[in-house]
Length: 222
Image (cartoon, rainbow, N blue to C red):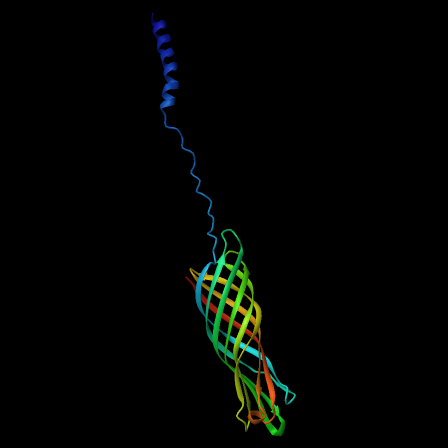
């Protein structure tokens, strides 16, 4: 009788063991955080900014057969608009700027006088095409350049014209923080020539002006 009871208890214990194991809490799977994917910067939008730098160039006075090398600083304002399609690295834009300049240079003229070429303001309206590496944008640019070309010869009244020419160049722009960007840019500009009559310069002449411009800028994109 005792042996039968012990055998019965053993059987019941073995039958209950799987049920008890099923009631135990299961071990949870380890949590894996989603992979971090940095946000892709989009350059689209309107922007305003400031720019400053310097320019060096050449000016030829054909009536006297002489040339001078005007140079000086510039500081101005910029406005533009960029468009970048979703998922595309190409950035297309239109940009305009105007700067106040102190560009001038002179050379010896006949009769111990000085032939000076001066530029007091300069501006451009340009297209831009860039290729975006997220927050870094190298670009090429080109369009219209305009500004004044002023001639001065000692002892004469000289002349001044507002001219329209062309410009081409390139640069790089990068995001600083938020919507703020900074850029470095080179432009070559030819803003044509101004005529100076014999009465105004002693001898009838034209004086042209070509400039190499290096400048930096900071923009805020809206």
